[in-house]
Length: 449
Ligand SMILES: *Cc1c(COP(=O)(O)O)cnc(C)c1O
Image (cartoon, rainbow, N blue to C red; front, side, top):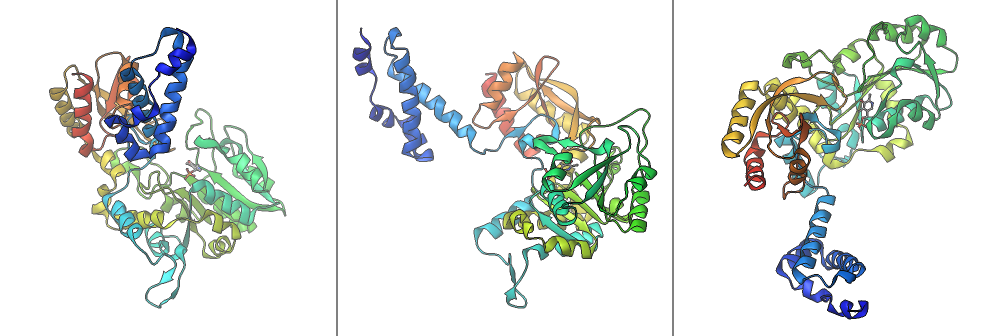
């Protein structure tokens, strides 16, 4: 058979389009995308016609596989079985029910985003979360932007363009996604003045670096690494006192920025927002979707006159927070105002889950799925907090080839992300929301049937 004869043997596009399973994707994606998938599969088949024309069923399955893959390329919910509670690749903090409700309510129709309902005149979106942020953090004033990286950029752009920023060498952090402090400083037009050694920095290092051109003293949370051994750091309060004497604002990039002392959950103490402010930081910046447990956002809190200058920076317009974020953030902050409601924030519910509760859930998995075994594991906070601290947790170790099982879990109708430990695929129950258990068990049953 020559190539051209075989080509005539390839099914026509309309034959695929009239297949009910392919048609179901057309209803989802539209005709153009489905036709693209068919064209890709036919192109592929044309390349290997030497082996004969594949049966229609084989080609149709290839089209369906292509479309299923395309479905997973869009933003879809996944189950997080990794045990990393604030997993940046998996969207960090899941939102509280009241935050979801606020997004729905404000997204469905109009809102008072930039309108003062009481007075009947223009209002400011930046004021919507202001009062709550002031009362929850104790700061004089606060401002919201898109994320913590934007917060740091805005601060540097406002105060340090063409001037010097003094940072301890041990804190020149690079976090995930290419946020590297020295590069952000450079982009904002500030000049970096590094002080101290990699492991030790003293107050006199900062003191000696002060110059007429010093714009800020900057502290940064060493989110994803620890320097251990012989080390020395400068206490926040001492740095703030130096800044006051010299008339130079002291700014801290807290990264995760907890509003709660994690020691309450049996974890090591992590510097809180309130602590940084009470030490006298002029401005602090932190994320909305890390330890706060809310939507992606950057929160700047601190001195009223400095925040007024940030508000006046035209760059703020490009970094401004959208209404859905604002709705979710306000709803999340309200949960902090009432301590008993904190575990409505999924991250805190996950931290509060006891090993006994997790074991009970794991037992349900093991009763329902043949070959599962309960495993003691370590979960992690993630999101640049306590990178070395494992939280005792319980997981379900799955039978079979680990890579194969992990791929089957990822590629199912409801993608599930596992982690591989001791040669087995494992689902850590601390990061799986309890309401997802039934769904995960059903997926496991179909994989191990
Ligand atoms: C996470 C982090 C950031 C960036 O926060 P985003 O909200 O992701 O932009 C900045 N600085 C530090 C120290 C961090 O840990």
